[in-house]
Image (cartoon, rainbow, N blue to C red; front, top):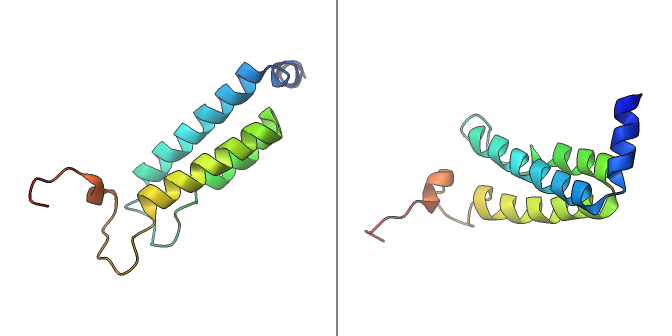
Amino acid sequence: MALLRAIETGRRSPYFAYGFALIAFLLALVLRWMADHALPPGFPFLTFFPAVILTTFFAGLWPGILVAVLSTLAAWYFFVPPEGSDWTGPARWRWDSSS
């Protein structure tokens, strides 16, 4: 009960809300990056959905929207292959002097 009261009290603070949102987004991004090799193609948003839902529940609507927008941009940029390419994962973003 005390934990729920602490979360409810902290929920009123914008520092808590947006801090929670950024930490949830970064954790989801790291988890997605680490699981990239184990997931079949077509799951770029898999770890981001729980982050959005939990952030909205614990921190509020606008921090949840922030996580949803950041997650969409990150999933699109890092995990959705370009149309008609031979994309093999996050290795496409490494710096290569031959290109």
